Length: 88
Image (cartoon, rainbow, N blue to C red; front, top):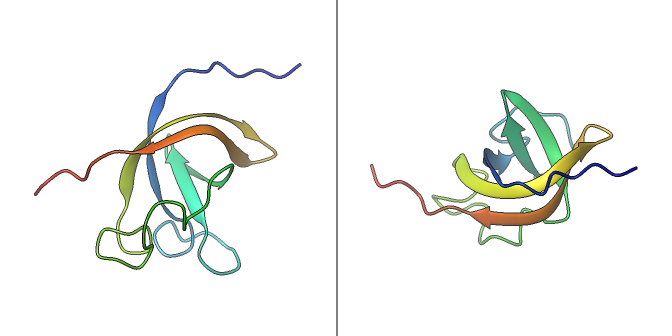
């Protein structure tokens, strides 16, 4: 039985390798939930602008509103919305 609460949670999203120090092959989108990092399935690092731009995932940790579930130590996305960067 698939358990998906369908509720939105705010997570940190970034490049797993560049920002979260995760093991992987090339740059890959990851989310951090409660201090634990997961690579994501269902969207990619290149679906959200240039990863190597100043505010891109390889250079910055961004906040995102996501719906999904953790499966096999990956976060399976059903909805991913990047939140506007907070102006410093």
